[in-house]
Length: 270
Image (cartoon, one colour):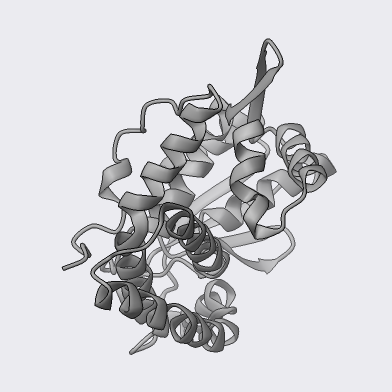
């Protein structure tokens, strides 16, 4: 924790805030902690790896414009689900891209049956939640409009935020490129931290949609290009600074996860 405190100090983040945030993440089951002498070490909880992997995919990789067979996955909660589990279930469904038609009914235009099987098993809700797959029959005058609105309701609200993101970070990426990538390690790490923080706050609020349901010229695509360019402009020096700071404190970084180097693929700085 000492290395983390020193790394975030230039951002004005206090020790108290860091410790409070870590304690909350442990309490929520997202992190686990271990002590070695006077030092405390934190890592992702085994049960949270799937959630982090899904978030990593959405933050660091392009949107997948998948074709659509016009079928929907529908999740219906049983009235007997206990409130704490109900809250956890809804949070996880949102992270999987489900929208709500009403408190107990959630819909997604993707086949999420495998993810749902694992989720319901982890929450011990198998048999208490109904999962259906099907399409709206056009012969009965049905329309996908209402279900589409349920899963894409935040798109309109996100559009100005994406444009503001591009205005904020495009000049930074361009300035670094013009200087030949010459930026000191601390500035590189702080830039990457603020960049990823700003990007994830928006992209994780986006609905997950097939190609047929995305609006044309979505500004989130331009934002991804800016984020990727800015990220690759600073990542090498940021990693060097991070490793050096941890080594100096006697808390070296663990080996990188497989796939770490694949973030923002095909968007390398040239």
